[in-house]
View 1 (cartoon, rainbow, N blue to C red):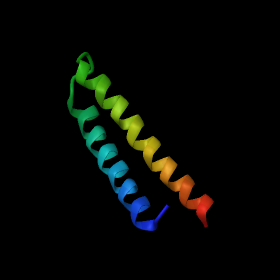
View 2: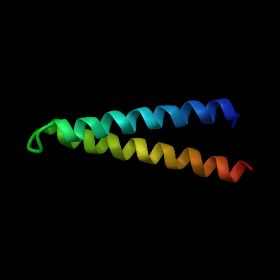
View 3: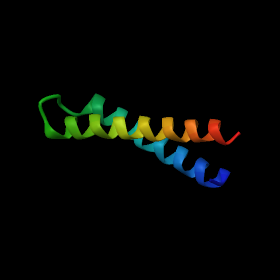
Length: 59
């Protein structure tokens, strides 16, 4: 995988994670949006983790 693609996926993961963290803090806990924000946070962290793992394996 090209370094540019990994960088793009990493940036997407960071963006999703930051936005999800902001929403987790601001959305009421009883709402459905809170659950979606937690899931988005997990997806963002997973994406960052996969990108870092692939980068390590390709070195």
